Image (tube, rainbow, N blue to C red):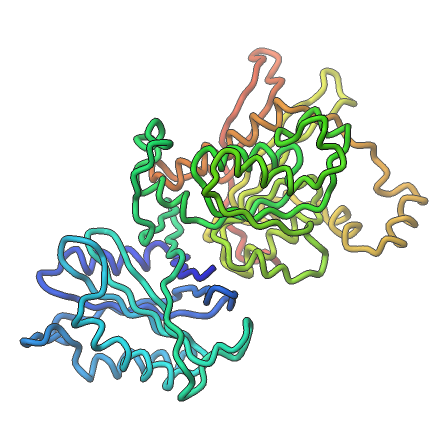
Amino acid sequence: MSTLKFTSADLWAQIENHFEQAHGERFAFGFTRLLHDSADGPVLEVVNVHLVPDEDVHHDRTGWYLSETALDRVHNYALRAGLGIAEFHNHGPGHAAFSRTDERGLAPMAQYVLDLLPGRPYVAGVWAAGQVHVEWWWAGREQVGGAGSQPGAPVERRGFDTMTVCGDRLFVPNAVPQPDPRMGRQEKLLTGEGQAALGALRIAVVGAGGTGSHMLIQLAYLGARNLVILDDDLLEETNLNRVVTAGHDDVGTAKTTLAERRIKDVDPCAHVRTYPRLSVDGEHPELRDVDLIIGCVDHDGPRHRLMQIALETRTPYLDVATGVDDDSTPAQVGGRVILCALSGPCLNCLDELDPQEIGRWGKSTEQQELDRAHGYGTNEPSPSVVFLNGLVVSAAIGELVAWVSGARPPATYLDIDIVGMAKTPGTQVAPRKVTPRDPDCLECG
């Protein structure tokens, strides 16, 4: 999936404020770096912006245009910095779309920039009334992961699937709200823009078992229509107490198959792609062009790898975990939800990863068997129950809805405790105060 990522919401806010105050057309440029080249197009991060001052914008009977001095300034900066260019301008009220005048200038400008900046896509977008239409041009993209554009090569032009702005709100300004009677009872809560964002975002859920099956079903009911699922486990009889996508006749069936079938039952329009489980050293290109990664895993090894991929690809990571300690009296039952946003602390900063557990996951099968022979990693699976999984996942979904709707910033860390305190027994869900990201963190610093 092709994506343009504003990983700093302030950068997009600068551009939007520039346009909102305009009396005529204004121009702004984003400078991009390539994160991934997918089968559907580039995944780009905007790392800096330049707002063109009004004195560099001119107008005649053919339309609005930039001075050569302004263009040279932008092109030279991109050339020196090794970055690509994303050009934005504003239109008046109405739908965001390129005009006939825009179209006449797009092809020669795209070709010029592609020749000037080989290997970097050219991006152009138009803003109108808070909505954006944005496209990419690239030449010589002969294969996924190739060298990119070459001078004189045929130019490919396509629209971005998503443009995301990640901050206190996860916003998708190129997602156009569409009337959907199925969502009528929730759209007032999610807002039209939030509902459109959920429908446009490509969301990866890693793990389709106890928590993962709950997560996928709730996402489907909410209107998430572009889902990636990673898991290669087959349903076992002992899973039937908590995998909500399965029935008794499904024992022996892949959990991803069960999840896809149930999602399509809820929403036949949903697009679902399934893959095997996360591997220790795999590149996992299927996770490199998504807008959000949700981890529903029960081991710190894959949890750590997911966090690494999220950091590498500049993708928010939502981690969901449950636990039961039946060695204590009474048993401790609870879970947590952690959102590793792009500006916040990672799981390592929060001291939520067990290095020994991560190390064991990275060992070969023979080494793991040797560890078990010496008493390492031999703990019996802890109890797992459907109501705990459902509660923790619902808390995570609540934060996601708050985030995409703009109702409030999401919590970084939620504690869920089923037992409660001696003086205040009962289920408790509470945000935990967390420290900022550690600048010396080996993972995200």
